[in-house]
Length: 442
Picture 1 (cartoon, helix red, strand yellow):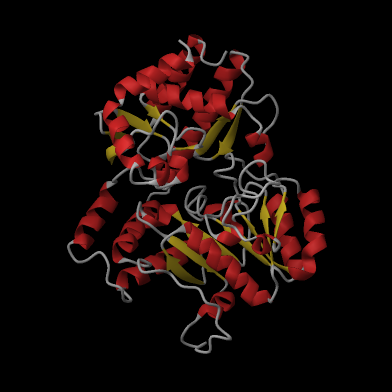
Picture 2: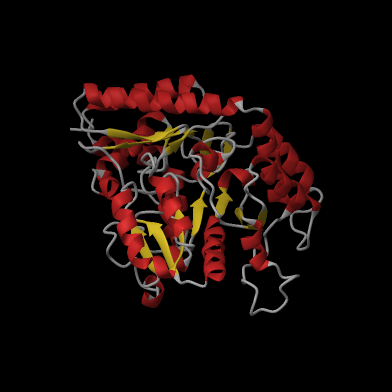
């Protein structure tokens, strides 16, 4: 079978989704409400989800490795979260005032991650990173933000620089050039080259913000010493070191990448998992820095860093869902042993299948995260990912959907959840072997 056969099979199995997409194109730009959720020929439309499965409008059931942008570490609608949400919804979804559930979740986060001395809830990761760099500028009185090439920190204007390949090109209309002049990009996993860039801007460097693990840019772990080298440079030069843990927080371990890589960030951001499947963003860290946003002790706007939270910040539904998730993880750290083993099994198995078939492929990831790249050489940064055969990766993921009911958002990394088991990985490997034998990769 060639790719056209899988494409036709997908279209035949998703006729209701195709009609929904035609309707949605009349309502949303591109027919979707998040850019990456479109894939060719059109996305299927989900109608429900449970455990490790997604159900679509045509009655298809997919084993899900996208897991809600990697946020659903316990799977879809896990009982502890569903029970907590059902109870809370009866008592209100939005109060618009301070609430006890927010205190409970914040105390839980702080107990797990003591470096979260103080925090502010918001509703998205984009907000959290925006507030973090604003706090850094307020603390240091400097302007320049350093980020990694390919690093993704959300759609806030400040950090929408060098996100998409070719990285030296502008990200598109609507972004003010003056803002980009105060953002410098460094090459992920090349400490020497990164320090050269940083040395040139150190006198006006407010912070370095970095994903400890490149997520959307290719599922790439950090090289040994890279993150600590950046942290040390920031400390020596009175800049802040900000760790964007929106993907890795509570994913790589209960205490996140901060613990995993032995880091001490001044500020860090959280999201995804700590919302329990509900919208959340958190900026947290050093109490003194966070106090710059204190509206009580700093009533004068000239001394207060203006960060907010939004109408839906700390809404009780998110707070109880997040606490139920973190409580379960804290009481059942065996979750990490299981999902990490599944991730290793997938990476090792996929590597062997493609190597045996002499198909140039690199499998990246760590712990419960993994992604295949059709490339002959090592994948170390976002440029390596962008210049691999992304079209073939999209075909592979579509064929898994069409023929084997296995879902990866095309070209994006997969994430194991506690709801997955070894039989799922074995089925993924068997499906991949079948696609190799079919001639898809020729």
